[in-house]
Amino acid sequence: MMATTTDHIRYDVLARDALRGVLKHVLADAAEHGLPGEHHFYITFVSKAEGVKISPRLLSQYPQEMTVILQHQFWDLVVTDDRFEVGLSFNGIPERLVIPFSAIKSFFDPSVQFGLQFEPVDEPAAAAETPTETLPVAAAPEAPPAEASDEPVKQGEGAEVVRLDRFRKK
Image 1: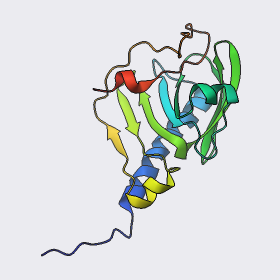
Image 2: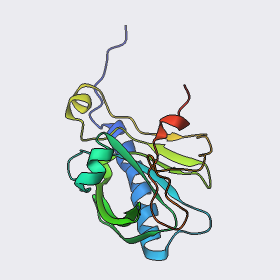
Image 3: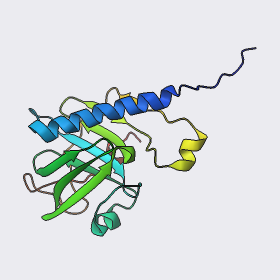
């Protein structure tokens, strides 16, 4: 019978951190040079995770998780070791969002069908019980045009918030 061994190296944590490094690198490049070609990013994060700063208005609309799209209208994208900050407009109202990398649940660039999915590290009960696993999304579905809650955000007017439930396979 084979003995169970403990992963003292924590490969799951190393892989998660490496993939978050990909996300950080992509955002830092976008902050410095803008988005190249048709690239744009869907970023889903836990709204109430530690370190997330969004307005009470947005938090009341998206109390669990929120998806932002960085495409045409965003400003002052700043990337640090542990988070990114960005200015976006929601239904004509400018907002400043602060999103720690640890709060991000998924990242998707539909222009090249590339995505990453994360288990947020700010869920202490889940993190303590099971190892966190981060896997790249091999073939994510092409995203249909996005809309924000009840009022679609018009092209060029600002950020779009979408609920990813409609993209998930039932």
